[in-house]
Image (cartoon, rainbow, N blue to C red; front, side, top):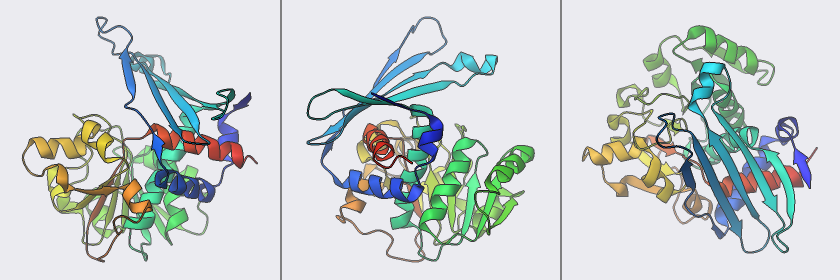
Length: 313
């Protein structure tokens, strides 16, 4: 059985990961609703253990195991830890264990880039990253694989953290214009693609900020009570999901406007299965505002893990 660490996962080019996920979303697979268990619901710390399995008919079988311990932050430790375990689809034999944190970070970014390959304008050149953490940095790298990005701006509530994120991107995105965005509304209006990857539970992106033709990517909020976009943005946009059923179960960006009566569930035009299978078109107008909301699916974790093993450097 192979043990794959974060460094080995980072060696997989985004180009290969995005294409692997494109094939994965087209395929017939099973991904039951994730099991999220409270380890001690009476202690008030909301410590969770999650199990997320997925498999297909012939080659893929695996699961992500994850823990969420919010109290770790006070001890300067990560709140979230995870592993992805793969099994041989024919025999059930364990074949690999992969660092789930790095794998999740990269597959999340690759899923966003895959969506952008259908929904962002072909001539999209200006990318705005909203957020300053490791996920935000990875989002920038992935989007640059699918569109001719010439400039990348990073905005965060803390300008110093935004500058550090930009410093991390500089050796990875050579040849592109990089900047810290000081004014979010102004930066959003100028962007062709906006990727929002924050821990915020309240809207950061407002509909009033977004220009015609913009593609907006929302990956940070993943609970029914949290969102990164306001209702006005969702109402004025064509909304797409990674997996429609998951978004309708977990994504406050969509569920809160539904609860307000501003939209209904049919506001979701389609998801990545429909886009990759060409059951629906991608962008058809240069002036449409498109929003892609992802909350994650175990299928993407298992496909990404398989891509790492198949293309190990």
